[in-house]
Length: 531
Image (cartoon, rainbow, N blue to C red; front, side, top):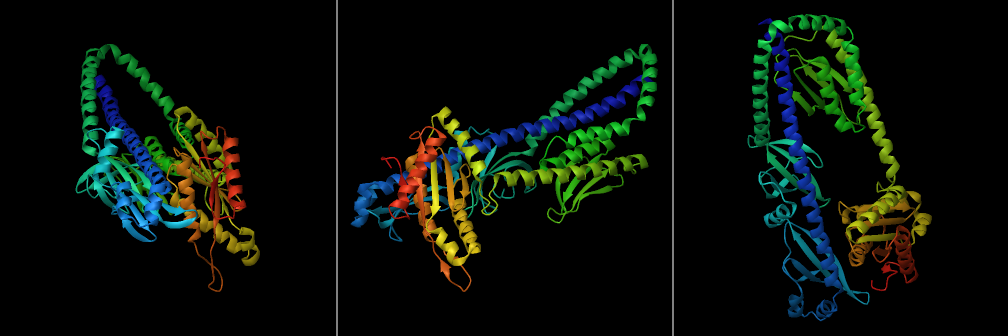
């Protein structure tokens, strides 16, 4: 009986740990599935927007549409457009009904440089789109998709699931039910649309409970076997007890070493907080724990505990707010040795958090332009090489746009470098609003900018450059005295496979930009005759 009791306690602990492990395993499987589904659906959506860009550019370049719009021939225009496509004559809607909510892709229409109006192709944000994304991304039957705009669900299920975070998995409670979610940002400001993939938490818990029950059955059979061999195993247990006494003195030192190894496993401050919590609970034997950042729970683990709380401050930097670690024993309170160990681990964790934060700052500064917060030349060149290899492998196009502010030196000479910096930041904001999540906008130096367009051909790159040119021409930058500066920009476009190597792409886009400058500025040109 003594042997059975001695074995039963650690086996029950093993069963408890296994239950936690099964819960994590099922959660990890669900997280991986949701992230895969969310990103796959986002890729399908991006292709839909790319097709809308292509279609808008195709319509705007159509001679038939241009002639019909020039003569205000409404019947001819109606024959050329499809549902969800709107044609404007000047600033007035001429044919078609705009869709809302939707992503609108617009291209201006002109003949020989004379503006006639614009063409807009809509990608509706509705249940029909979600059904298409679900089919194309092969979403699991138990999972759901929803579209969220500015913290409001505009399509999909469950309704109201609008507080799911973007680019990470999280638990969200809605109307008393819990869901595991993963959010992907589809469209940035000003539309601000996210796609949320979710699955009921109950399904994850049921899978973990079933695996736990099988584990408990196996442990019960193990106890029966141990009881039958009890007398023979008594001497061995006595020797094991003496060994544990010898090892007990080194336990604290070993725990600190294990926590140190865990903290060194990542340089991401957000991912480090759950690691800190888990490692501290394992080392101290805490029954429950959580991490609060500026009063908000960012990590939590364990069951309800009735013991006295131990509160440890990990960071109180004003830039991130106070970060606090709270742990509870199963009952009573932690003894003096455990409290000392916990404080030592918290000090080690605080250093790891500071190092991770500094690492993130240095890493971001290495790839970001300080003035505009766009990608810098180094990041852009690395991405160009990577995306060109991917385009070659999958047989997809890759677009490149070079942009340069016209007469920028005159702005600096007349108004000063501070106003010049203000102009550069305003133009960078134009790029950020126009490019997709999968594209990359960069400042190459001075007033030179570039945009790399994934899965975009030469016509699509030309259409984006035209929209950027129109946007830049509408900017007004206020300076001292209330005056407003207006600017224009010239663009050169190139694409793979017309250009085959990074050097050829860069040279072709640069030649197009030079041609635009030479022909009078404020225009889009390509070095390829087909453009």
